[in-house]
Length: 312
Image (tube, rainbow, N blue to C red):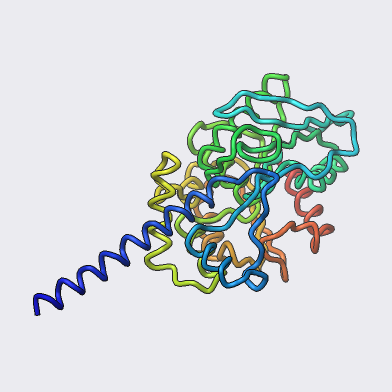
């Protein structure tokens, strides 16, 4: 019986250590981009058996996102000092109604916001497109899925405010939306309005969603991965909860959501919407996932955004 117990203990101990080692590597790869010239891990069906095992143990390789194009309009490149040095593009509009600052999602960069910027420019606004730390031409390779990026939202808001602009609006998609929400919750900045697309309800929920998309069980690996991600990045990931940040947002908010989103559930969106304190509007898009809403909903998106901005 004692021999059996020792053997059982060794198996459990080995599995526990193995899960933590795997989670450690995955957490690091999830929050740290590889060199921009490195090879991105391909989809599972394209991987050899050896590559699948390697990916299982060491995580997915994500090269640092690079800007793929530049605005067609005249723009100014800015380097702002925040927790990291970040790069922005400022596009000024004649007879501007205000300035919209645009923040991208995870694994993207400011050039991914050019089409949204163009829509705001058509509506009469100036725009500023931002590379979060670790992305594009901004410093580093780290991303914290909106946590430390919240400080960069504040830096951008303060810069635009320092130019004398009074009508400042914040736009963010996914991680960018979360960074905006955390910034307002932490710093009490007061933009004239915010437009947020598909923010997740909590960091734990978004980690679980990644496991579900891979048809992998969420327990216990999602929690272990989030624990090691917290240790590696210097903040408690279990406390990174946009649904709670929403309780401190009292300014006008337009919340946008794709009904086929597999990364963010409708329950998360409804909880965030319920917790928002000020003037608020929720618009949803059918047959749309966690993607660029302009691809399938350009007319409706522009109408929703213009209606919101004209009402505040």
